Image 1 (cartoon, each protein chain N blue to C red):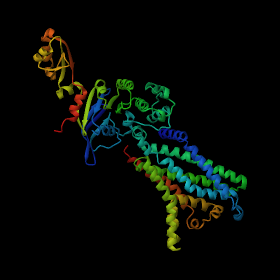
Image 2: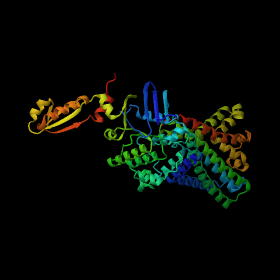
Image 3: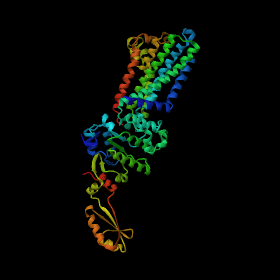
Length: 273
Length: 297
């Protein structure tokens, strides 16, 4: 079992060496800080502390950024090795394909977790320092960091799936961009369109919340919003959250990484280097 | 138990409608060095990938010792050098080789292994800065990890300068010396000639030859070239021996291996008229051309 750790160690070295870790952390810190300061205006009107507003803004940020950062590392994981011709050599060693994938996943997830924790943590600390923080808003921050890492895990796994299916790293990068667009932007637009057409009928009442929570990006949003009243108020998005049982969003966000990894594993098994 | 390090028995594989491997049989004893020759697309790399279990075969069996390709035991027992291998440019040679050592579970001394292939000075430099030959040497270093039963080298000399090639063949001899069966897929015919125990030639997915160089020459019946230098009168010599006049003072004769001694006796019988005799057996290149381009029967 130590073989996957050897892969993990090497992947960590690569992420540090090619500055991915530095860049990702920097992006997270800068965006989180910018949103915290830009979004601090409505504190007075809503009667919540600054950290709560900051978490609400950062939730919206993370929906876009976490999948993007995850896909940026994951697309190269298999297709890149195929392109370099090193996958056939790697596969001639005793490590199984599951171990190789698990090793990469562990390293990539650790890097994402580092970037998220530092980025949101810094912004949270700044918000708390300037605008105060309560126990509830600190919990919301911890939840944001944890769910962002889970959301990253989903898109790492989906990125590996595309990397195994694509012919070459360039194709994998293109597919990843498409995947991001569908899950993060088009899916919501489609749902919005459906709700408008339906004009508050059965679809909006009973089907819509479930279709929404099936998308990991929306499940992430719902989980963070439903859990904290202040955040829900600050983001103005309570309706859909109330229509679902409490476990729906967490279940979706926890099932997706497992499902994605299983799919990636199955696709990787069929790759002939 | 089998005493063969690698045995391939009647293996066939189809890719779409084309038969890429057609009834291949080949076996290597421990310590044997076998050259696998053939044009591009003859099926050499496909055969190597089948031995590694990276691609499936439809008919026949392959065994590494007693293990099936792709099994944990087989992967422990095989070493592989892919054609034109490349590694992640951000890693150093030491880091890359350490990863392979950990994956193979061997406690190899990584720095001394890199020193062995002439990368001692580039140990902690990034692979991105390596030349093609240096990457090839790094690939070779990982073949030496552990004590594989079978080493599969796909075009190991590509990108190497002549001195590195000498080193490469020294390493292959070392591998064979420790009992590893070495299969070398190659285009560098002249080097393979002297450095291998047996030669296997593939054409269009079929094994068309598999024997020692001498036996292959005899089977092919390619002529031996005799160059006789006259001491005084090349005209008379040519008339006597019935060969072609070449470059002024010499006569060239072609004879089959069976007639070789007879021809030499005749030349010796000419006494003082002959100043020198040079004998050239058919080269691997001639043999290769004979076997690899032979019309389909």
